[in-house]
Image 1 (cartoon, helix red, strand yellow):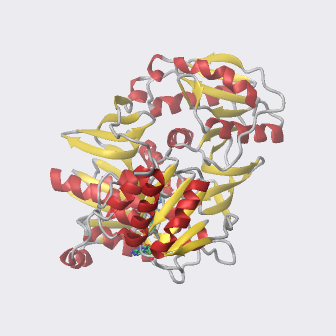
Image 2 (cartoon, rainbow over the protein chains, first blue to last red):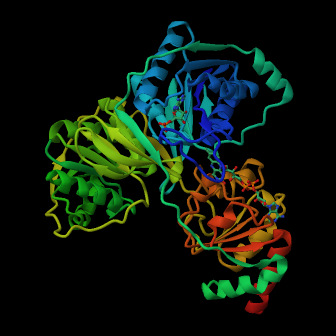
Image 3 (cartoon, each protein chain N blue to C red):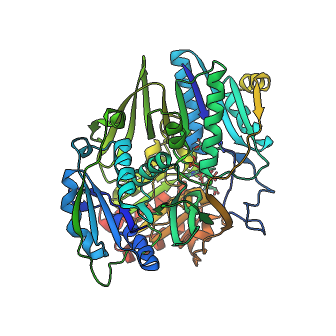
Length: 254
Length: 326
Ligand SMILES: Cc1cc2nc3c(=O)[nH]c(=O)nc-3n(C[C@H](O)[C@H](O)[C@H](O)COP(=O)(O)OP(=O)(O)OC[C@H]3O[C@@H](n4cnc5c(N)ncnc54)[C@H](O)[C@@H]3O)c2cc1C
Ligand SMILES: Nc1ncnc2c1ncn2[C@@H]1O[C@H](COP(=O)(O)O)[C@@H](O)[C@H]1O
């Protein structure tokens, strides 16, 4: 089984977001970087599929050179090789992103590395476009199931499970296929020290696609109006309990 | 470019709770462009929802009928919408920003190779469209230009107040029959499995007791369970506790978990990261219990108790039991 998983480098914002003066990006001076929890689960799922079925998992990102950090994290938990589609640290819109990923997959195919399974996050952590995986699937003429929270592979068929309006919806599709994954599908492992060491030696191939734009152009980022709350301190420690009860009574919850 | 087309989700003839939001934003586009508001209903049983569309100013309903469309098949549904778009030539296509709405629009966008803006809160028509959409699950907004005709967009959930039209539409129904081959049905739900979870669902619970890293262990959640049971509420948690395996992911509140909307959210040992708080936004009131008076959640809560939750919760539980005569 050849599995590709696509991840996007994003700032690990904490208690609040600050936007740079020009409104073009999140102020990241004091921040680390990460990928979406959905994508962390997609990476874990790729590794599990390969562990169960044999084959190899590859990870791909479109982003700045610094995104090798996110690629290495995936390589540290069992992915074998990485593809960096290097950009000038500007964000690409979802249509342009999908186009570049599609071209990279085709190139891999042409080099004899066809994928049986392509995994994406259901939505990216920052932009939340809800579309890159679906676009890539259509461009490659592959079936796609979104929002997947359970995946079983049997031979050439995948059974994908997701939450529907009235319980679980189950989809059966033939491979090759695309799945967009939601957090909860698995519990990702932490990288081991030997895993991190091995990751340093695993190959990252780099290319530099051209951004032709995709028709959704960011003008600026703005913070939503802050909901100011006046906090009422009910007290310190267990002595506050009677005031908590009074509040519960006032809200008619007791 | 003849109309504003809205994709309407329904269940057994009843509008999905997000449909009025999509219809309201679509109607604002209809008013700004002077083009009539139309809606799409998919599947035989969906026709029953047509009368519910008139109050929102819908003048025309396309009822899409095909043998295969009664069960949800995303590609076939999207293919039907794309064919209807080719015939009806809408100015814009609008869906609700639900899982299904965003999925359908992504398929439509991919099939037509048009740009698509998900989770929009405000929009001005034109060439290009000028819009505001949510990022980071709602913690950040993006102003953007959207090219392409028709303009494809979905409406962020809970971002605008649904409003009925001043003058209801006639909502005349026209049947549309798409041409769909086998391939369009290669992805279809083969099975529905009812979920077995008993008790009150986190999303609908009137009281939620949430736990974070401060709870300290899986066993530590017994206190939260007890408090939730006394208040007829549900237990939830932060991503830290689901990642540590203390709670299942179904209990996670936040950007990549469940969005809650209780009368009271009691957040215990949770720091208040934006990705967590964005899932608790629907809470009417928040009570934080935290040992750190400087924790960010203290500034985002309505009420706070500063202290160790392992001491505060037993005292609160004892008070409630006393009050209830237990
Ligand atoms: C893209 C993305 C998506 C994310 N999605 C989610 C999501 O859906 N949901 C989510 O929750 N997080 C999400 N996160 C993670 C989020 O950023 C935080 O890391 C997480 O919410 C922190 O959890 P916490 O508050 O339990 O832990 P911490 O931040 O470690 O806070 C623990 C708190 O407990 C307090 N405390 C410690 N001991 C005690 C005690 N004995 N009594 C009382 N208080 C005590 C401390 O003072 C502290 O405030 C996401 C992150 C990213 C990057
Ligand atoms: N720059 C990128 N590089 C690699 N994968 C991406 C990128 N942007 C989006 N994706 C993938 O597409 C998914 C959906 O993204 P989006 O359509 O932006 O919500 C993400 O979860 C990733 O798996």
